[in-house]
Length: 414
Image (cartoon, rainbow, N blue to C red):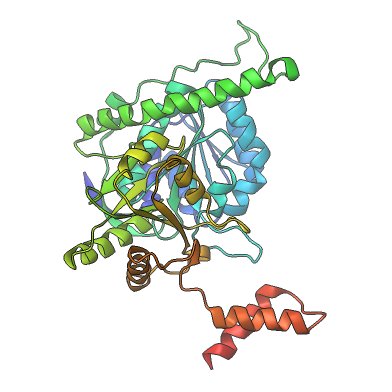
């Protein structure tokens, strides 16, 4: 049934349709509405047989989720930004223990300086923790990916993050098709854990492992990710057959056939990219895009095949690896090893800065003419940067950069 609904509320309802037995909640912007929504459904009695646990921190949220999952419960939580960093130890533990927890990340920048708006700094910081990471382009896909995430997590006994852009998706109202309980029940089997704490069959979970076995344990965690490369598209195909719409999978191509320039990105920015591509195609430019849904595991073979005809690849990054450029671009270059395509990194949207069609258009034109630098910052205010660099050179006690940049912005705007 179709609803005009906020993205967070839609995700809350989708999670409830998956019949979680334990939900661990600690609010942090911009994911708060999600756990509030699930909590309201529990309180109203619309989500039954579910223990909704308010905890005292993000670390506690995932720690409780680990205990609940180890006890055999279908378990869910959500977080964002500093909350994800605060639970970092537990993030690694959940993956290392092979527990099928599903967690929403309402993507938000990491400070300092403090910033509540969207980029991908938070989930990127945990990219190698052993969790599967799926990125939603739209709120409809966010709903669909959560339903698929529980099935994926439980078939592999591996935790899954579903990443959706903070505010851009979490707080946006859209027309969303929410499936019925019967449809979700038919798609998502009853949870049968592969490991569960049971007094009748006692064993240890989380025991100390020395050098004689640690490599093998880590290898098997890697093998789960490799298995996911096959399972993610299989589950996506079954989802399409059951619900009548394509959603999920590893990558989504858009007008990439015969394209000389191909844009690669994660998340909601792909919608804006497609609009720019439509305009540029109308002007006769051979340009297309690839949206990556599964960032972990990274679809090297599928991406290599999608980019095989490209002369150049433009990677739009909502994350910065200082001193390097972009994390996503590094993975794209790995997929293209041995190929001749030039890969450009464009850092965009940090801390929620708008990614405008005109700005993307100019960058894509420059790329098509091979006039981009290796790492480009979209809409960077170079005048403010130069003022701050000069101030730092000439003033010994130059003080905090963030506050000074705000003052420099005011001066430049006068």
